[in-house]
Image (spheres, rainbow, N blue to C red):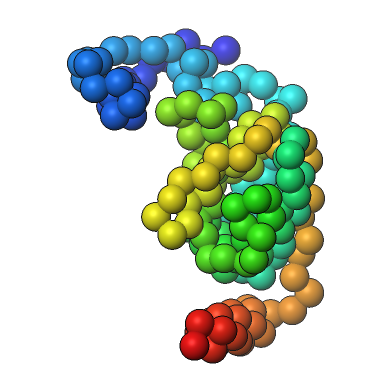
Length: 160
């Protein structure tokens, strides 16, 4: 078990409770979400950086199903559909996984954790993930670029 420490601020919580001071404090590495993932091999999940553009991630949460069509796995940019908030496909950034608080495992979707998604300036946190399945694209990156262009054109023409 890693016993090194990291520095944290409670700045992410101070917006919710303005009376809380922004103090620096030290927490053990295993209390950080990255540390929890390191010490628990039981966490199932997928790292977005191991995927390719045009791969699709199917995520089932406690309350909803999501389809995430990756446009840029490094940044988490994707077309996302699912849940109450994303009935129609929308461009979004899949930030990663969280327990629901301030800690975020960026670029990783984990079973038992909640997905954090940004779209149209709004942060959405899902119910806990129950399963993750990856569907790999069967074609090259040049075909993915043309699909992305076509989706952008359809989206633009749908707004007129």
